[in-house]
Image 1 (cartoon, rainbow, N blue to C red):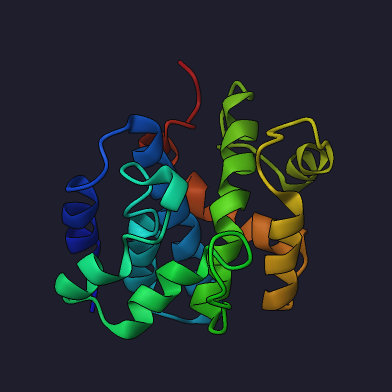
Image 2 (tube, rainbow, N blue to C red):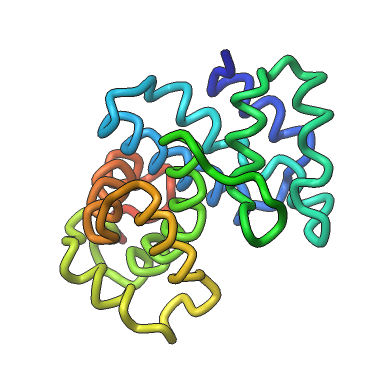
Length: 187
């Protein structure tokens, strides 16, 4: 089973850009929150979240095309590789998210971008962010415009949850790692 330590080792072989490392950490935190919500293995889900963009820095135009084989060679199992591939469903591939882990990763990949952007605009960062203020930013299509809200909504539908509910879980999980994510209170 993939551990966070192993996920960090693997990502370090392909990824050096600080913003991509922060994104990996954001997704890791959110995945941990959703794992807890679903009663799943938090550390395992965090590891999958951390590693999800394994080939992105090296192959941004062919993202996920250079993921399966290297991760198979690194001893990830089929379910772990499938979960990572499924976050590209309908954009990059046709690996439809089926499990809660797959659906969660599909959803939080974009959602964490809006959460982080909203947190960076606040003096206290994410530490005092409430779901109501996040939802205002979510509804403003000009804010964090590159984050695909329709994809987020589609993922939430797959999970059988409202955007507000998924976002609240992710925000709380990200609050626990606020300083590491660079979204803690400003000095």
